[in-house]
Amino acid sequence: MRTETETETGSKPDSAVIRDALGVGIAVGLSGFAFGVTSAGSGLSLLQTCTLSLLVFTGASQFALVGALAAGGSPFTAAAGAFFLGVRNTFYGLRLSQLLALPRAVRPFAAHWVIDETTAVTLAQPTRRAARIGFTVTGLSLYVLWNLTTLIGALGARALGDTDVWGLDAATPAVFLALLAPMLRTSTERAVAALAVLLGLGFLPVLPAGVPVLVAALAAPAVLFLKGRTMSRTAKEDDR
Image 1 (cartoon, rainbow, N blue to C red):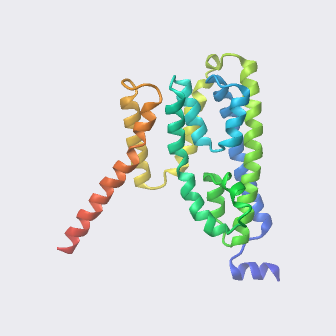
Image 2: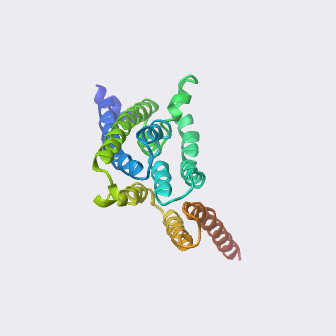
Image 3: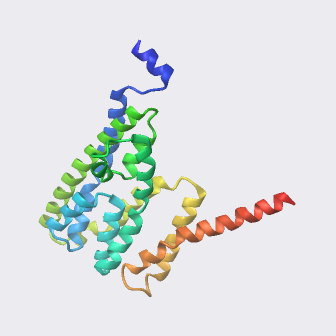
């Protein structure tokens, strides 16, 4: 009877939601190893590295921060680049707040788990109950594993010594690209990414370390502006 009800209402068994959420949390959480290693290699202490994962908890921003510091950028430009990458989580939160409808007392704590992975799992659920379970399990498993692997990675980097000798300095861009690639689903998103790469690489030789990341952030408004003009021009031609 339960199976029939689930099929009719379009709901999803709790066990299936938990399984999917754990799969995402474990798969992504393991990349904390790479962050711990690269953060330690960039000169941050064990405490600083672990504090970043505990308080920031957004992989792309954390990798951008330590990557800029490793390249010799100032803490200000590194933090600014990380901030711009993290702004998207605010928009995720606006959508999830309506979907989850969590009690007011819980919202400040839940906000810390609003990231790409929890948003993707939550939005994929057919009911509010499934969405809440998916968000909670993904957020909890990913937060615990990400921080644990960050600690292990940072300790491992200290034991290895100079991480550049092992080629681990390449881990930051590699993991960053791995996190970014699945997000580029539309032609507009791919155009923004391509322009950001061109701007970042183009200004790399002439600007201080970390600043090219801020310049690359201009790719998004530039592409959206051009897209808007193109759509407006097309609409006018159709009206003729």
